[in-house]
Image (cartoon, rainbow, N blue to C red):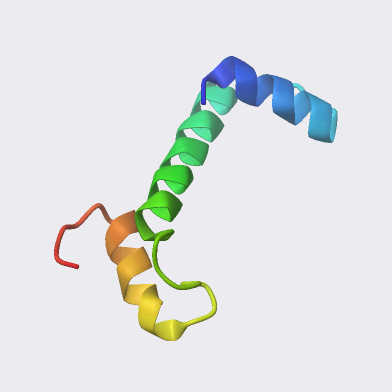
Length: 66
């Protein structure tokens, strides 16, 4: 997601105007979370099954020792 799209979404949802730096940081965070969730999405519901927390944390850390 690019910063302008993030800026537009935040304005639409929250009625708040983001500056360039905040929009860039939030867009990067959103992309990172999306990639992390996609990495574990094929398995069970990791948020409700403790056995999957390790996989989620490894994906978030961008490690390969799963």
